Image (tube, rainbow, N blue to C red; front, side, top):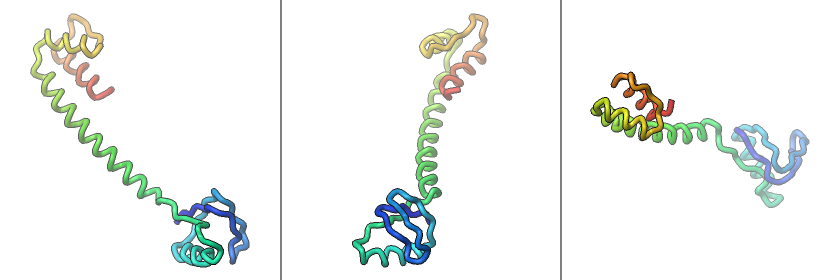
Length: 120
């Protein structure tokens, strides 16, 4: 496990001197022993750092939530766009600032608009 040093101290066994800000790797048992031994000197010398997997999982869950919301919004917008006629699609392109040619078909305009909505 990763541990952050909050106050400088010298390790009882290795004689290594740690300073505030150092990040060290310890076993759970060694961490517990270190905390117990350093309580004699006022405690607060080290703290556990969050595991990378835990942080990644939290961020990943937030991204999934955002992605689901965006996908839902896109589906709703895409359905609305699919119902539009050629003239209305051209108006949507202008609304979104999408360049198009007069000879673009409904399918091409729909593709440009859905790409815009997806953010590509």
